Amino acid sequence: MEGDLAYIGAGLAGMGTGIAALGVGNVAANFLAGALRNPSAAASQTATLFIGIAFAEALGIFSFLVALLLMFAV
Amino acid sequence: MASTTHDAGHGAADAAHGAVDAAAHGSSGMPQLDFSTYGNQIFWLLVTLVVIYLILSRVALPRIAAILNERHGTITNDLAAAEDLKAKAVEAENAYNKALADARAEAQRIAAETRAEIQVEVDEAIARADAEISAKAAESEKAIAEIRASSLDSVKEVATDTAAALVAALGGKDDVDTIAAAVADRTKG
Amino acid sequence: MGKLFFYVALALVLVSGVIFAPEHAGLAIHPMDQFTVKPLFGGDHIAWYTPTNVTLWMFLAVLAIFALLVIGSSSRSIVPSRGQSVAELAYGFIYKMVEDVAGKDAVKFFPYIITLFMFIVVSNFLGLIPMSFTTTSHFAVTGVLAVVVFVAITLTGFILHGGKFLGLFWVSSAPLALRPVLALIEVISYFVRPVSLCIRLAGNIMAGHAVLKVFAGFAGALGFASFLPIFAISAFYALEVLVAFIQAYVFTILTCVYLKDALHPSH
Image (cartoon, rainbow over all chains, first blue to last red; front, top):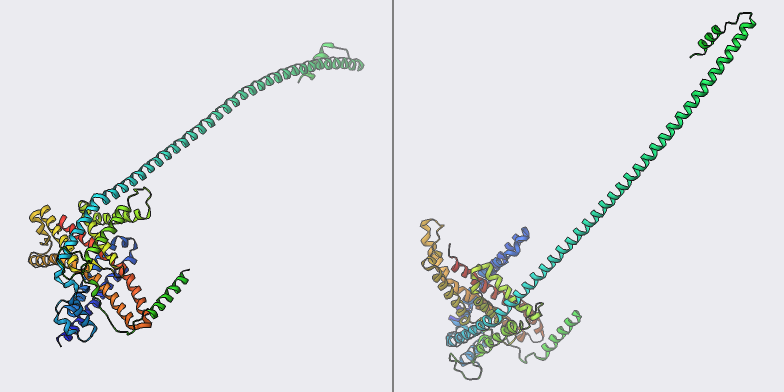
C-alpha cells in the first residue's frame, strides 16, 4: 500500500517536469520574439539563452529526480 | 554481473505490481544512490581529471596555441606583404601619371615654341609684303600723278590753243596771257 | 540514393523486428540498470581501487581526448586537416567563452575549464554509444565536478579579495532594510550552485538515457510492431546528442559565470 502511494507521488512529481517544459518554452519563445525584433543583437545573446534554459530546466530535472527517488529509493 | 540487490530490483520491476518488494530494499533501484560505489567513482574520476589536465596543459594546449599563433603570424605577414605590394603598385601608378603629365607638358611647350617661330616668320613675311605693296603703290601713285600732270599740261595747251583759235576766229584780238589765265582758272580744281 | 538508403534501413528494422522478436512479449523495462557500476574482472565487492566500468569508460574518455587534441594537432599544419580543425575549434570555443564571460584576467584558469569541458562533453558523447556506460550520469561524478568548481571558485574569491569577497552577498544598491534578507537569499543561492550544477548534468543525462531504455522496453513488448518505438528512439537519440553537448556547454559557461563573480565580486 505504501509503495502504491509512492507511485502516485512519483506521478505527481513527474508533472513538475512538464511544467518546467512550459518555463523552457517561455524562455525560448521570448528569446525568439526579441531576436526577430532585433536580429543583429540575437547572436550575442545565445549564451544568455542557454543559461536561462538551463536554469529553467534544472528545476524540471529536480522534480524528475524526486519522481525517480519515489519510484526506486523510497 | 549484477549484484543480488539488482536482481531483486529486476524482480520487482518484472512483477509490475510487486513494487512494494523493491521499496523494502531501500536504494536498490537507483545505482546513482548506491553509496558503496562512490569511493570508487570519485577515485577514478580524480585520476581521470588529473590525467586529462596533464595531457592538456603539457602537450595539447601549448601546441594548439602555437599553431594558432603561427597561423596568425603567417596571416599578418601575408597581409603586410600584400599591403607592401599595394603601396608599390600605387607608387608605380603615380610615377606613370607623372611621366605622362611631363610628356604632355613638354609636347605643349614644343608646340607653343613652334607656333611662336612660325608666327615670327609669318609676321616678317607680312611686313615684307606690306612694304613691297606700299612701295608699289607709291610708285603707281607717282606714275599716276605724272600722267595726270602731263595730261593736264596737254589739256592746258590744247585748251589755250583752242581758245586762241576760237578768239581769233571770233575776230578778237588774241591776248595770250588772258587766255592762259582763263584756261588755268578753268582747269584748276 | 538517400531514399534508397532509407528504404533499406526501414526493411532492416522490420526484418530484425520479426527475427529478434522475443518468444514471449513482455513489458520488461529496466531503465536504471544501464547505470549499474560493475567490476570489470568479476567479483562482487567494489573497493575504491577496483577497476570498474567507470574506470573503463573514463579511460576511453582520456583516450578520445588524447586522440582529438594531441594526435589531431600533431601535424601542426598552417592549413589544418579535419582533425586539427576540430581540436582548434574546441580550443577556440572554450577560450572565447572564458574570455567573453569571465573576463580577460580569467584566461589563466583556461586549462582547468577546458579540462572540465572536454571531460564532460566526451563522456556524454561516449555514453551515447549503445551498451556503453555513462560516467556523467552519476551523482558521484558530477557532484565531485561541481564541488571542485565550487571550492576552487570560493577559494579564488577569498584569496584575491579577502573579506571583500563577502560583498558579493551584501547588495549595496538595495535599501538598507532589505539587505539582510537579500544577503540570506544570496547566501542560499550561492550554496545551491554546486547542487544545481551536479543535479542538472547528471539528471539530464540520466533522464535521456532512461527514456531511451523505456522506449527500448516498449520495442521488446510490441514484437512485430517494434519498429514504431525504434523510430521514437531515433528521434530521442538526436535530441540526446544535442543535450549531451548543451549540458557540457551549460556546465562550462556557468563555471565561467561563477568565476566572474569570484574575480569581480562588486555587486
